[in-house]
Image 1 (cartoon, rainbow, N blue to C red):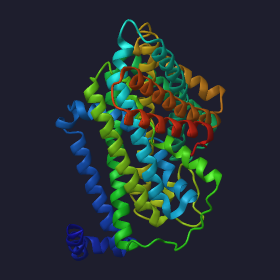
Image 2 (cartoon, rainbow, N blue to C red; image 1 turned 135 degrees about the vertical axis):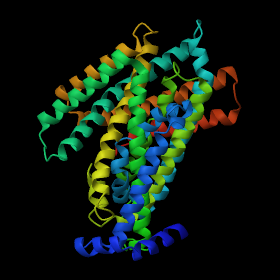
Image 3 (cartoon, rainbow, N blue to C red; image 1 turned 45 degrees about the horizontal axis):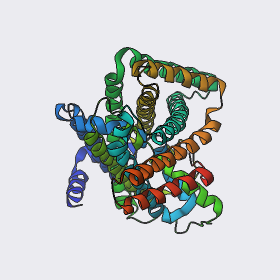
Image 4 (tube, one colour; image 1 turned 30 degrees about the horizontal axis):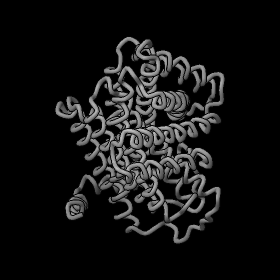
Length: 431
């Protein structure tokens, strides 16, 4: 904090800052926050778009799962947790990210040990059955989530122009989905990945900008005291079921399983861990810092974070809107890439990835026009949980039959699998 104290004292004596404060009724504290977060965002953008990072295979392989993990859930996780569990939000979220990391270890095990079995000519029939069920459940979930992500993107973009028309939103969603499909069809995975990289870099810069803004606001304005002293929370079966559903907010790491055509197993395992660690730290820091600003009548909406950000900085509302758009766009691209990998693998390469990308986009467009995407997202959430359960069964079967690792690993797969099954049966989607 010494650096910030020094900078704050310098700004206090700056004549320009004093003039702005006097003319615009703009507090020195707000100016300090805005300048600090702007410098951070600019610095991060320069770093993330530098040649070293752009050419880094590790970062490029990290971007796809990271883009999917930090999707629409980031916009609602804080108010949602606040309403559900109040001041215990950070501890509940810590449990959620630990469970997600445990599930990630199952996927990583399957990348390292199960994938080779699936690539042999004489495949174990039980592996094939479990893998086909995994393909179907995850494929369905991806189709719905892709349409959902872009639909939210359209809503945010149009709201900036004060347009709240369903037909216009669906039309814009269709154009964006078609754009993704055509880019994938004509330019392939590499171009889609580069779009995801650009989106994630901008999103990450804005997220860290927001986190620093919250840190400074909590420290300078609130002195790390909550704006309200009490928050009544009633724990019930419904609360627990919604907490189960929160796991799906940090879902997306499984995409590393389906980009094997571009990256080897060791790199995918490494970057999946990295994506989960980065996203977990972002979620934990964000939720902890924003809890100080939560009110008694806090609501869970897509734009709740924008409303809260107005208290922190004049720059953040617009930044969060831009971040939300890029967040949804990168998440949709990541899921398109994952779904394309599933279709290609399931068809034994009879359907190319490029053709799969266009097919996915067309199906998602049809979903937008002929189904209530906000209702069937509940079904998609259950499909994600079912997919994780089948992955646990795959890992358990491989470990039991082929004695790859010890009994403790089998016990790990059983415990995680039971958790996924409970989420599938009892979990209520939280977004």
